[in-house]
Amino acid sequence: MKRTLMGLLLVVSLASILAAACSPSKAEIAAQQRDQCFANEQQIKMAIDLVNADTGVYPEIGGVVTKLGVKCPAGGTYSFDPNTNTVSCSVHGHK
Image (cartoon, rainbow, N blue to C red):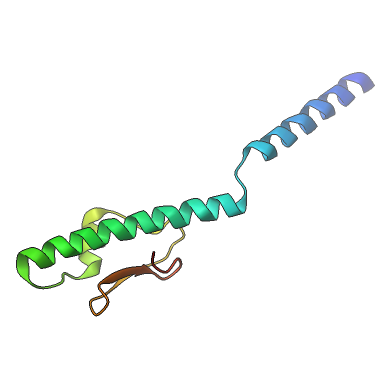
């Protein structure tokens, strides 16, 4: 019985170590989220520029974000500054 319990503990310990080694670090996850957010910003910017080229006015960013179905993976909100023609995120800023 003791050997079986020791073997089980060893297997569980090894499985935990392997799981921890295979999972991404917090820094890696944050970098992935930032990269995804910047990619979303580029999509939003292109859509805004296309509408502006067609109509001569900038669309509301909320409508563009909704239509594209994008959102910041860290929960930030996107904004557009027509003076600088930039899209930025409340969490990640802009690229």
